[in-house]
Structures are given as structure tokens and as C-alpha cells.
Length: 77
Image 1 (cartoon, one colour):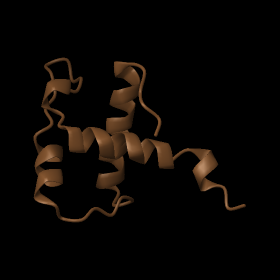
Image 2: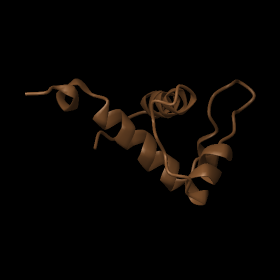
Image 3: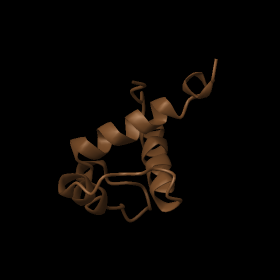
Image 4: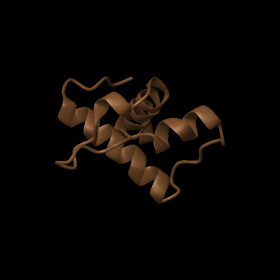
């Protein structure tokens, strides 16, 4: 798994997760903990993601999605 080295990278992972959920690219099971984690995420007044509101399930899903979205996993060799 690719772990983000900065806040900017982690916010990119979270935005990729949000975009995938909006476009229905990501098929998620209806697990209450996962849904609560995604819906409890808040933004700061400067429109940055408030990282203290992101739970471990959402963090793991965002980082995993980013890892599997990389080109080396998309090659069909």
C-alpha cells in the first residue's frame, strides 16, 4: 500500500475516494461503519479536509484505492 508522505498526498487520496464514490466507480458494500466514516468527514473553513474527522476505515480505504489505481496494477500482462 502506498502511504502518503504529506497532508497534500493524503488529501489527494481522500479526494480520489470521494470522486470514485460520486461517479459510482467504486462499488462499496453497505457497511454502517464505512458509511459513517465517509459521512462524518468535515471540511475546515478554508475548504481543506479536517483530518481529525477521518476515521481509520476511511483512511485505509482511501490509501488502498490510490494504490490499486496506479498503473502497475492496471497492466494486463
